[in-house]
Amino acid sequence: MPLVLDATVGGAAANAYTTAAAADTYFLGRAFADAWAATYTTTQKEQALVFATSLLDREKWQGVKGGTPASGL
Image (spheres, rainbow, N blue to C red):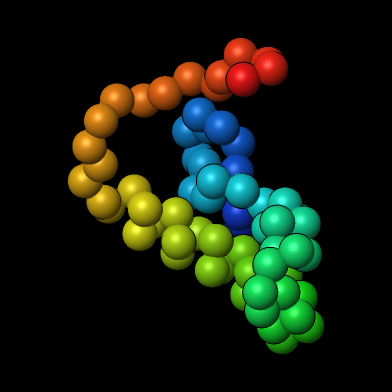
């Protein structure tokens, strides 16, 4: 069964924190952006995002959840 990336915040089936399209936008102004854009297919990008999410979810984080700062901060 092919991977289906689900970046729905709070979704029961969510398996990633972002989409491949959002990651493409993020990488536009960063080092090695050409490698991300030209080397990998959308499927490979989605696989990388799901894998990265699983790594982050396994970490033990200190502190408390924050909120979105009020506008103007």
